[in-house]
Image 1 (cartoon, helix red, strand yellow):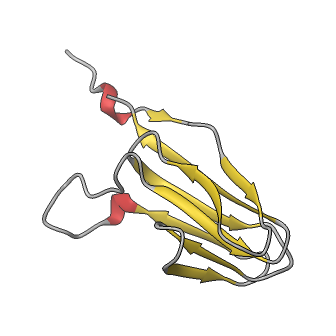
Image 2 (cartoon, one colour):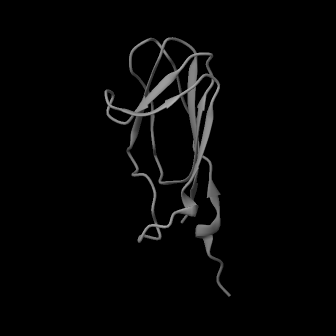
Length: 105
């Protein structure tokens, strides 16, 4: 009997940055996430972008958002974000972090 190792989770380093009032790089995905957690750890609104200028989502103070890509209903069974996706954040102060897990192969 073989064991399907793709069912094991990997835990890469948290992506994090302090907000400065303009877009700063939070980090880049090194693996395809299965579950990803966006966490506004500040007392200020933070906007998130994947190109450093266009807002993808705005987070209210101290908001966390969990995106579980395993629940997808798209046509592709491997629906996920691309490796190399870079996130940027803009807020007046405080920290923003992104944590995720990925399926080991």
